Amino acid sequence: MTEWAAALQPEERAPLELRALYRQYGYTYYKMSRFEEYDFYARNRDFLVSEGVIPFTDTTGRLMALKPDVTLSIVKGCRPGKGEVTRCFYHENVYRVSDLSQTYREIPQAGVEAIGEIDRAVRCEVALLAAKSLRALSNSCVLTLSHLDVAAALLEPLPAPARAPALACLSQKNAHGLTEICKQWGAAEVLPALRELPCQTPAFSLAAEELAAAAEAAAAGGAEVAIDFSLVQSGRYYNGLVLEGFMKGAPARVLSGGQYDPLLRRLGKQAGGVGFAVYLDRLPVESDPAEEDADVLLLYPAGAPADRVLAVAERLRAQGKRVAACKAAPAGGRYREQIILDQNGEVTGA
Amino acid sequence: MSEFLHIALPKGRLGERVYRRFAAAGFACPGVLEDTRRLIFENAEQKVRYFWVKPSDVAIYVERGAADLGVAGKDILLEYRPDVLELLDLQTGCCRMAVAARQDFRDRPERTLRVATKFPRIAGDYYRSLGRDIDIIRLNGSIELAPLLGLSDVIVDLVETGATLRENHLTELETVAPVSARLIANRASFPFHRAAITAVMEGLRQQPEEA
Image 1 (cartoon, each protein chain N blue to C red):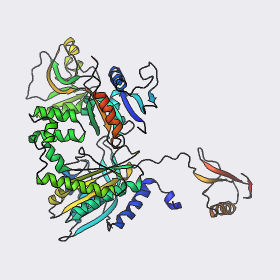
Image 2 (image 1 turned 90 degrees about the vertical axis):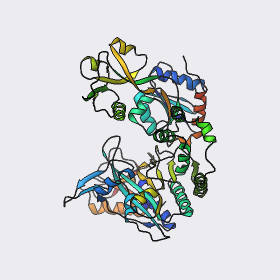
Image 3 (image 1 turned 60 degrees about the vertical axis):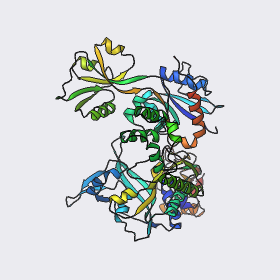
Image 4 (image 1 turned 120 degrees about the vertical axis):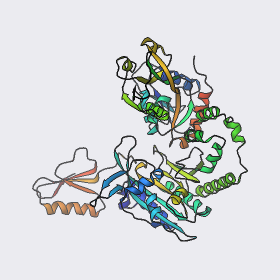
């Protein structure tokens, strides 16, 4: 690792690595404003991951919001021509109100979006990029994939009011809860119902094919790939392939995405979309308590000539050492070696 | 299992009862049930590490990934809605979330109903589903006292046998939700410990609940 790369924190290094990866696949950098008119989010609130938008009034009295989501803004400004696919990547902070603590949060994200005439090859490419993104940042990672049409087929035998609670059970791997709902609504037992799934319907077969193709593509990305039907995400936002990524040492998903055609339809676009975001604030924390603050602690007394102190420090730095020049050793500081200068700026001891 | 599985147990009788099922399922750990101040116990051979936490904190430990698995009451899951997997109904610690009131209580639908509870979210969701306007009074204990002193019209609280209600001249009006202990898992650790967690689930499923 180069010196400058070693100086970066994981959340600073990650977007640079991802940026290099996405550029290899022809994705271009998309930079956007931090602000958007509040009304835009108010109209599309059901497509936001979190309800908590942070509003403010600008100098002209317009009600604005700190951007709570990147995809909405990209989709809004995107106009791919017929047969085209716009590919872009971003590295942005989004701002939300924490559901738990009700405090404001700044969340750094990086990700890709492909918008336009999306075919299977594009969906597979995005699944592969998701796997490669995880692998670029962690040696132990899992990408889980699902297809919402499969979940829809699973819940098809249930009456409409029972589907939302059944979907919640599915997302929690809550088999006992699902059984209860089936009993309550007079549907068949879960397992017999599964055996009678309409596997021969065109929609279901297509979903299974899509999922298999995406999983196969992702497997080449170096992450472990798993099919997991408990991955149902927000049904309003996504409509087909959905994906989530996990890294060892991170307590929550670090990547999330999928196909979001309903969002494009809502914004009046005759196009499809697929993409994902990597949550840079959730990357595993690198614990390296042994690392020193600098290689050398250069101690000089009050009154020592500044040019001598600087010259000694620069000489050491020229040898590739990191040097902290101080009058007193900082409390709790860690250094490989200590060099002491006298009143004249000469080295007296180590 | 190549790595330790961290399991958060709720302190108290329920946690001890659940631990015995873990032990019978093949995941015993020396010292867990001893009367000591230790909080963490491990079995290096089985690669499991248990720790005792306050029952209402189990879901937080699991959601935040400090524990891979935990045992939490359905009341806690409904109230705090942690983003966790709910893998198994352990069919133990069974009770119900219920609405109760003084025996002479008469509902007046034209008035806002005053509801005292430790579970404002559960109570709020329940009355919202009925389209009823309520005023929630959040209390931390001795909920039964609220209607007796005129602080509230009804209470929403856990009821096991109903003895406490009867002793305080209260009567149970409605069941809001059945409650029992659930095995929960962290979403992010599940893909990395799938085999071990499945083994624990299967083991627990085969252990009958103690009478």
